[in-house]
Length: 422
Image (cartoon, rainbow, N blue to C red):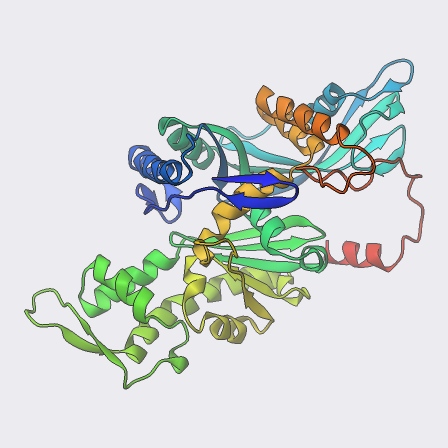
């Protein structure tokens, strides 16, 4: 639970529970998942002394499909000012298409608006025109995953006000402006699955999901050492190394073995070899997919997040396997300084930074009138600030609301690289 004021994200409370009802990062038991959500929400409510009603929901990138879309609406026979409703209408026009019955729209992200042929506009409202166009990116996922996720949230007594593809939110929150611009691979090593997302030109261009994550490492430790899942998880967290070359053969620790009355001594290096074997298997499959898209040649390298990214030596192992620059991102919020909290913080940060136009576009997608009211409230707040004030609006205003001349040839080296990576 967080608030976003004057460009600053302030965490009010948080709840952390084991993700019951999930398998390989996907909900397979709605009832169990719902109960886990309830427990986490209750813990956050108790810490913040605030009751939670509306939530931001992260949707995994499993079988994610990304495609460009465009919409066109007539403002009228004569030129008039473009309104909020016009923005919603052109967004609705962009998503009129025949989706397969097994897929569902998750996000529509606007790239630009075009007013009477003038392109590159971020916010067309209050401009005068007779024709409004919008170009954007549409993100769709399997209906089963989207439905089960929202259903579990609703069953927990919450309103899923906004859904977002998780790598979109994470890319905005953990990558620098340069990393988002020139291209970076965001590698989320979660418990249920591992996700490699390519962020370039400030957009999510590609996502690959491997259905193996930290839970598989825990199971490997449990099977090899013949110990319980609970003990295996503790061993991974307390003694685990991702890179076996950094672990010691001399440092040993006791392990409770099933069927034996006394613990067995296991070396730090032996445990590391078990962990490393599973990680190399995950990395090998993701590397094949990323290499096919030339993503590993992007200048931003790889940024690691997710609970598995907390393992000692993970940076060296990834750097050796992918042969590129690697860094781990860790939240700087007090009490949440662990890679496993990155996704939750990214979701609230994404909502906090959403512009009024983005809220209107998303409301057209979901029919959520609450988002429309929030966009209007943000507009009223920003307009009430005097021009000479030094305060920052709670949501950043769009960077350019002026119409530009139609594009011409020779846009320069930036467009060349953009087209090249596309």
